[in-house]
Figure 1 (cartoon, helix red, strand yellow):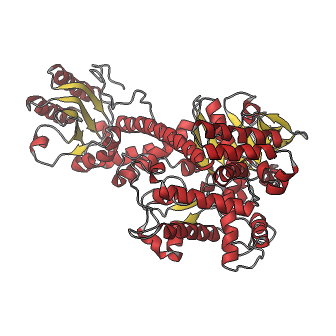
Figure 2: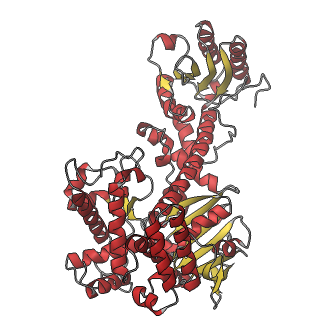
Length: 634
């Protein structure tokens, strides 16, 4: 039974002690870790605790040498304060070899002797913890050790004292991981916004052309449809009109219609951090629904202070913590699963239903984005494949983004012109004024066809006109010009992409030219896109691009990459990004920053390599190759 004796902890809690420590013993991962600690004795237990203490103490825990002066002073692990002059934490470990029911006076005496050795050593610490591998169930043991700890605190040798069993330690670790994972989510959210703004600009319209719809979950089916008419409205308002709490939302649109930008704006309007998940992470070989969120979120790679050597112990706990955080009601997170049509799992039979079933008990809003044509192709599959209970009676708001009309095009260009005026870019402002004068007139359509109807391409067009002036452009020339200008700008202005501005271009060595760097950037993107093309046709299905490419497969084709393994640096000189955080010991993967870029470079690869336009070429890539061939490109 629980001890009625003196109460711990005692003293003002140090800043590294989590404020909310709850039991995590209902999870398999924590029970397994607790069982492993229970089996460790003496020095093996002391060493096994180090990764967990590293996590709680922000990587500052140090294991002291056996039989040395620190050990003689009743210290197994310690952590120094930032000034290096005082101890901020001391931990004494006891790995008992007796069973739980045998814990008693002898074990208590061991603990008391160690506590008194520290008290008599003349050392002081901000916090002292007695940590053991059993449970605090025996009243005599608990009271004897607690009394010694209270005496230690009252002597002034320790400002804060506590008695931890192995489960208390793991509870502390999970609570600390909760804080670290949430911090990583926010950093990830900020990084995404910055990356998207740097890539396509910060100008976004509030009201855009869209069609709204509503779907209802009925049994294990999903029924509903979109309105037949297009209206000018705010996609954020349309999607969240049913309330900002738990539930699914669906955002559709053709390529280049601004789905990712709209999703991020929705999170800002709600005052929530966007926990952004590239759907390309959802592997086709995935099985077991409850592991899906852990697979996608991958929090461990975001925890920078945890050494690689500790990952084996910490990773299972970090994964279950991240999953549980989403399964508790909260008002500050929006889960965005972006580009479901790029998920290998979604292309499997009933793959979309599997994803919907997995996120059914997430207690935060979930926003799914995908291309319109993919949703309509997969909607019929959902009949009979959804779990009936989680969604019983629920409805799902849906928005389909539509092509832009002249008023929206004019508004975005006007914003860009105003910004050019504010920053003193006189020539750019003049060029954009000339472009504004053409809207609604025949020359505008003759120069640009339907390019401006898609927000992505309109952003590219604005960038091109600001730099080059009004000129006739087809989509191929526009994309080629924009990519070349962006890469050259980043190479010539490293301060835009690297703090301090002294970052060497990652794709060249010292002494190699700017032209060499640009050529390697294009080669890398051509090769990466080519490796996402299907190797052979699949009967009864349209060919589609793979979602990502392995780093080692790129090195096999481009050997000069072998010595340039800085993925962050590579992403500044191409349109490729690391797929999720990279875990030590696992082959890195890269994805294109936007599907349109991937399709463009895949078409270039097809034409450069002379690949036949057979059943392995996706329709969107085939459309690009047709446009390219018509103008003699590349």
